[in-house]
Amino acid sequence: MNLADFDYHLPEDLIAQSPPADRAGGRMLVIHRSTGRWEDRQFRDLPEYLHPGDCLVLNDSRVFPARLFGFRTGANLTGQVEVFLLRAVSADGRCWEALVRPGRKLPVGEHICFTPELEAEIIARGEFGQRTIRFSGPPDLFAEFEKIGHVPLPPYIKRADAASDRESYQTVFAREKGSVAAPTAGLHFTHETLNACRARGGAVAYVTLHVGLGTFQPLHTERVEEAHLHTERYSITEPNAALIREAKRLVAVGTTSVRTLESAAAGASAGETDIFIYPGYQFRAAGAVLTNFHLPKTSLLLLVCAFAGTELALAAYRHAVDQRYQFYSYGDCMLIV
Image (tube, rainbow, N blue to C red):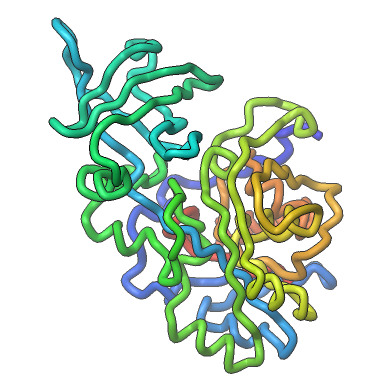
């Protein structure tokens, strides 16, 4: 399969730049796989599509302020440095995989100062511009990130992060710190919506997948089958696993929940996954999917095409463009049943 076949045209003005005033007030395009039709609805209509025996599966990973700004240390070194933290890679939590800018000026051995108390050293290089950095300073790094970090808004949001993004770029059920991008399908939910889903007879289960490069990095090959994703950590607690096992149908909220369910179905309930789902994949767990609209030629769009069928999914995307749905992280959503 050629990656170019999973492209579509999107006018720039349809890319949502700010969160909606009402989390649950967005539009929802409902795709019916069995008939190949779709209907334009509102997200608040979601409970109508749930039945007793369904289980809504939500990713409870919490976004932390993963963009840090500092300065190179040493004589005659000037200029601001941006560090985008991706994931902790050591047992003590002091070493992190990160993207750095400007990359060419930051070799192994370079030191970066963020505050008088917090510094980091670049200790290794990786592919696609990644670095491994080791922090020195206070023992509670997450507390420092909360003080000085910025919300890691995606690059297609053409504005600086605001204080309000710390709440709006976070699901209302986020618990486990570790994501560098929000599981955006979950952003639509309010506590009232979750209660309405339960009232329809659906259970609610939580999984955790910490969003990193495996979810949002562009694919670097022209042939789909040659692409590989970075690993991301996931886990499902036993009480939640029991709810999932008992369900007649699993309604996965977001591609990260899909990947967690499918990884667990193929192996353990916790670990690391680099599962790459594209057309031809045989789903073992997900029975319906709620998801936002995704960038062209990405692993996320490929997953949607695998679940809905490529022709139907891309036709639905074209319809969403024609009907001026809002796209990407702060945009509208799609329910595939």
